[in-house]
Figure 1 (tube, rainbow, N blue to C red):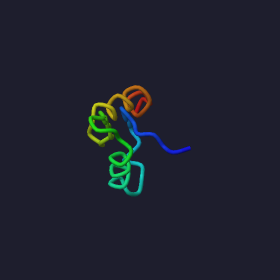
Figure 2 (tube, rainbow, N blue to C red):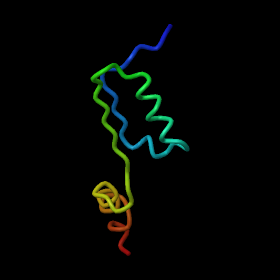
Figure 3 (spheres, rainbow, N blue to C red):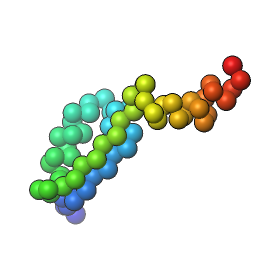
Length: 64
C-alpha cells in the first residue's frame, strides 16, 4: 500500500532524539501535501518544560 500524503504533522519532543533531525524534516516535506501544517516542539535545557519537570518530579521535590 503506498504512503499517502499528510494534511497535518505533529511532533512533540521527538525530533531532537534522532541522530539526523535534518533528515526527519526532509522526509516530512516529502510526505506533506501542499499547505500542510507542521508543528514541532523540541526541548531545550533552560525551558519552561524542563522547569515544570524539575518542580514536579525532580530536585525541587527531593528535599535537597
